[in-house]
Amino acid sequence: MRRLFFATTATFISLLLPGGAMAMTSVVSGTTSAALNSNTASSSYGGANEANFLRIKNSNSPNPGFTSGTIDINSDAVLLQAFVSNSSSSEMARNVGLTITLPAGFSTRQTITATLRSDNAGSLSDSATMVDSQPFGLAFDQSAQVYVAHRSGTGDNDYVNDATGNYRINGNVMSIDLGDWTGGQNQQGLVTVRINVLRNPAPVLPAFACTGLSRSSIDNNRSTFTANSNGQAAGVNISGYTFTVKDAAGRVVDTNTVNTSAQSAAYNFNQSNSGTYTVTAVANSDKGATAVTNVCTQSVTVPAVLSSSTTTTTPTPTTTHALPNTGAGDVLGIFSGVSAFGAAGHYAVRRFRR
Image 1 (cartoon, rainbow, N blue to C red):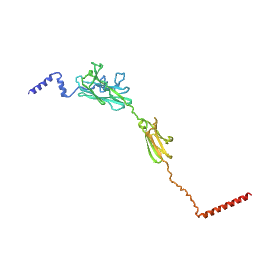
Image 2: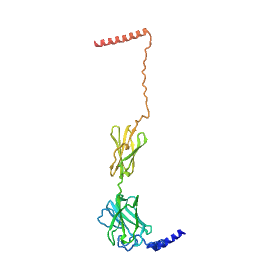
Image 3: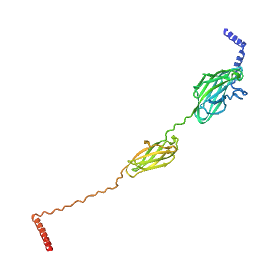
Image 4: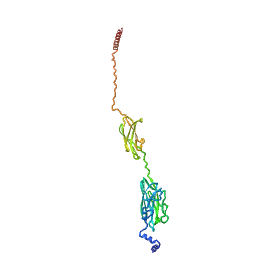
């Protein structure tokens, strides 16, 4: 009974206190007069429509004013500014927050989006766009202050900046807590954030090179050599490949240039003379030729050619005829005959001389 009595008494007293009926009415009816940037006839920051609350400018701009819509990038950072207003002169906008989302990646056109929201005053979104002739990216400058400014007095007095630490950055999203926001024109505010402009670094291209020389054998003195290059990856336009053949003494025995824009080319090696040969390949392009390297150098050996038939010459044997063994009488008779023949010749010579 006592608890019920005190509860009833407390409710009755609250109705008698100033503001008690308004608070009760707000809870019971569920209505609110707080509204963010709802003035469409304003001549203040938002122009004719406060829903266009997001503006931007280059950080090096001498003009103190910001621009809505699209700007050309000409500095290494931009300043983004959001206008905040609660049109109610009697009720606060509860738990107001601003979320800024940056685009990911690099492009010649980037658009930042922002959402202003409140627990009891609704929400709205706006965007700002930047363009440039070269791709660029955006990132929050975490070394810079985030400022929240309010008017310094009544009417159209200037805004006074105050740095705030009530924000969080998660990648390309910044969330700023603005707390409860009092209504009325004198409580209008500005949130200013610095954003770095990132230039897309030029890709580091590999050096232009002949990347390989392979050999396919056809027979003893013929082979096909195929050269490859990284012209496409190196950002050059291939114009051809030059193959050079040298013998073991270093003399050039053949040079062949294959005109092509392809990433590879083939050369047909054909040498009839036996020996070891060195084949090198270089790639040619609009940016020059590649160097001679071991990667694009091959050696090939042509074997000596053997005769298909072999003729063997057999020497004719020498025949020796032995004299017959007839004994001493036969030998003596032969000697006597020879002597008589010689004597007859001698006699004839002497008669001739007379």
